[in-house]
Image 1 (cartoon, rainbow, N blue to C red):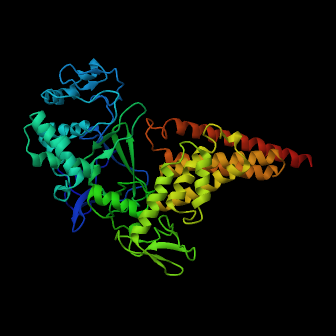
Image 2 (spheres, rainbow, N blue to C red):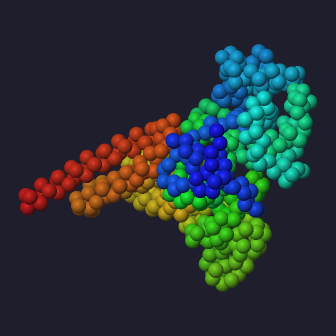
Image 3 (cartoon, rainbow, N blue to C red):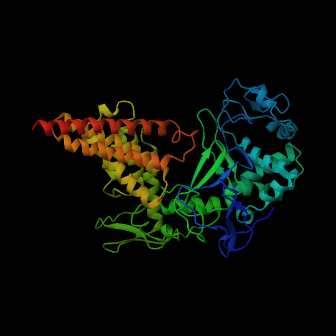
Length: 509
């Protein structure tokens, strides 16, 4: 049954996940295409979508995995008796979900991916094939074919040529699929432009899913929704209050990449350029996340036009200009250096900050922030660096890094923020542990200890508020949420003990 948008009177294609009342619709805007607006006021935390994928399957060049359940396969894994692709076992090979594709894959007389081997481009064909097999379901096929493909922009690109080899030619020539090249390329385009990466579970391969309704949300680098995955079900919530008539947006890429890297991904992977407020601002909303220091006066150097990848960069102090190519080389060198750091080495991460944290970078540059985020997590959690093993200096650094990252999340992810919730839990550990240690060393008073315990409790309470919507199937909504609740209870009990001791001391005096 059709329904209309309460605001504009047009077709309301999307309904509230809780009450099914139409609450937003899609419109067209030159240069943007379709976009989604709220048909009524939406509250922060409100569930907007709860959507299963039209189809899901392995990522490009995925690790050998079961075609039915997605579990990673060891070398001794079984194979489907009919199509001979490696599978978990007989039950997965005989599953209804595998039946249709099995009949197609069985036509190939050639070799198959080897279980337990390295990632293979042979898996690239699986998800496009699953989309093609939806042709006999008109309603789903209609949703699918309405999605953007950008097939013209993709022609003669590396990804187009890869798709020609690993998808189009393979399915048409080796599997005798009845579909023309253009259709198969359009299906590949639908996936590359619209699919979302699914959250990998331990022991399972990398996968992606196509969510028709979620795909209708346009991108913004500071979006007003939060996306969560409950298994393979996409949940979309308003991260901020959204007023009737305002656009509903989602982030297609991490907020913790600088403008140049976000634009490179969006331009080459999604075929558009974002022009949001953050992207237009050379300072990235006063964070200077992508800026670096001038070699002459040590002031900050920013792009003169963030929307142009080749615009010159200029120092805000002395006005010295720097070609964009030099900035790219600097960032590439620093990125390679970060990737070359020994995995799990706290000392290597600290040394990186010591070398670059003030010059040629600065404390808020994204290279430095990424390392600080890793250290904030490793301090108190990594082997040899548990809370009781940390020096006071490293506890202070953990607190400092957490506070800096939290301030950044307020700018880049206002409202509900999974990242901020996790950082607040780590900040609690630093603040409370340091206060307890200083109290034991007679460096602070019981009153100051109580203040720190109460502050820590507020951090945990805010973290619980931010993570309360996370699905129980995820670490944040499951184990971490339970830990947070236990921690909050411990904060209350410890604070009450200290409060009582202060009262007893006052009474005795």
